[in-house]
Amino acid sequence: KLHIIHADIKLDNFLYRNEIEIVLADFGLAMSGTVYSAKPDVVAAPPSTHLRGTPGYIAPELYSSSDVHYTSKSDVFAIGVTIFSLLAGAPVREFSREDRKIIDTTSYLRKNSHSFRALIVSTFFKTTLDKMLAAKPEARYSAKEAYDALLADVSKCLEFMRTGGVLNGVNFTPDNRMLDDLPVLLHRMIEVAKNRWCAINNSPKCIQEDEIFRIFRDNTVFYNQLSLKYR
Image (cartoon, rainbow, N blue to C red; front, side, top):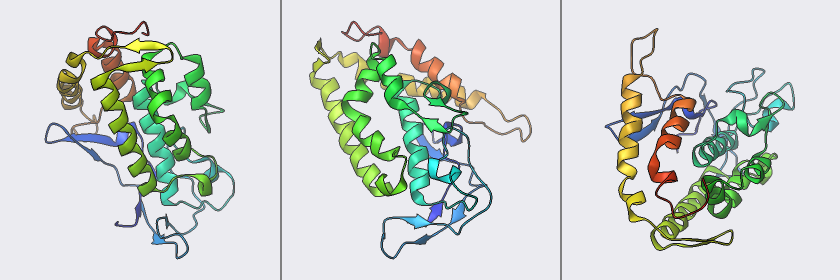
């Protein structure tokens, strides 16, 4: 709505506020854009000669020419990487290649098909994430399309967790404790965030990638209370 392109969306730039509210931070590379007349759901910034962002989260079209054209779809790509990373429980380095210029979620999911988290991503989120991570921006979801699709995916996933069903031939019996204990997991993540400090500014620092994954992997809710053979 504000026609702002962040240009550096990544896990490190999400912070906690008011204990459970997540906010996007660090607008140091952000740019103001204008709406395409032919595509009112896409915001574009003036061409730049400087590549901005973090490897692994940078959209592929930004590497392709000397004139860098950032749009809101560049941010959609970075959000797609962030969401996949959180859902799959994998740092970006585990599903990127060629110096993190290429994102390959398909190979990662295939290689980790035994993982419950990968199975959840493949079943409920892969179609949306594929559209968010499309190599060509014209084939990529707009921000609104991604938002609407993710809401629908989350709704289906939560319903499955509440009611149970079959995933990849394996019957899943829901354990309500998994949903009940989610606030505990959030509070653990919040405590990590509160205890991290920026050495330069002496101010609260966001959770780093490896800490997020350690918390998820150590949490018995997702791995020990699931009635699945997947670990």
